[in-house]
Image 1 (cartoon, helix red, strand yellow):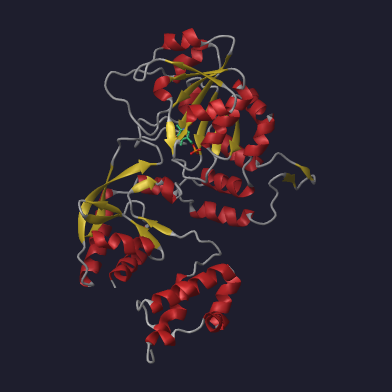
Image 2: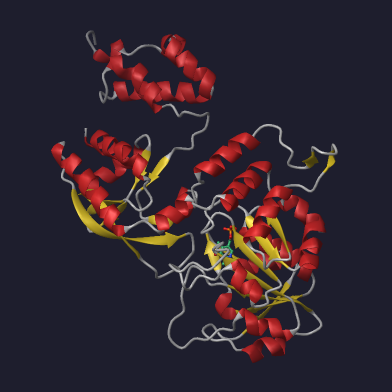
Length: 431
Ligand SMILES: *Cc1c(COP(=O)(O)O)cnc(C)c1O
């Protein structure tokens, strides 16, 4: 077929020889460049772009780093969105990660030239943040913290745990199965809705490794319920390992039902475990805080080496602890009045571009398995639902929430610096 516009699509080898793509090649490597070129040629063949636009479409589709991880603007209103990587790092933490990416004294004493305790400055920062902890240790994530405690303190022995606190944390993983996998036997006590101190007291014996208290972070049991607090459990004469999950180090007035490390340690928990990338707003990590000798036992256990965190995590965690104004805290405390004002301005700009945008109230949530049932009143830009897919596939990708046949872009977790990008993304998705 002569005159077929598809003939005008440049050949792959010619495109790849273009200096612009050669630059991109050095930046992100051959595989991603070739894929971008093929995708753009495909679009041209399908008549969705002009043949002359292939080169620029390929360039525009390339990531800025040699990964396929896409930057996402989180307009879901879910502060700790597990699928979107939970807590975003603060600028201070990002800088710390970059600085730590080269050679660093993570395990080296520059004064003496000898080996030093790994990550000591991060551990110091964590101890300073929670003075009630005799000592602290950091592992890969909250689940690893529990595995380490179970392996080092209860392998071949019993962990006493309430049936009402046997939590599934997501993707089918259950804490009690994790602990059993570490070689501990579970001694379940109480009923699904209620447990009493005497249930624990009856179960404790010479075989007890520890009592496990779990904050049921991602669900609530309502009605005829009772549970036993850390202070009472601590009186039973065996170690109490308390999993707060959320990573709050101190009480947070906005989240009165979320336990924090300082309070549970003061109540008598032997060890508190928590995640680094939930309400603490730091990198993925597992925190263990508590009794000095117990922490030393955990730290020296052979399995600890397999759960060790890397220098990037240590750097990000330390920066998070020393400069605690995190994007997570900002999103959590976002002022509804300001959110409404921003939503109004964004909607007005979109309307001026001929897009059917309005402003609507929108409830955010904490997410990440924290504070179930708590809603965070906020505001969103409301758009036609058909925009959800093109916005998701854009660069950067924008993820909102579809409600009642509309797409809501909830501004709680969108830094105001991204407002302009958001407008452009919506305009692009409409074009
Ligand atoms: C999230 C959570 C965990 C698991 O922590 P990860 O950091 O995701 O491994 C364990 N226990 C509770 C109560 C949690 O909320």
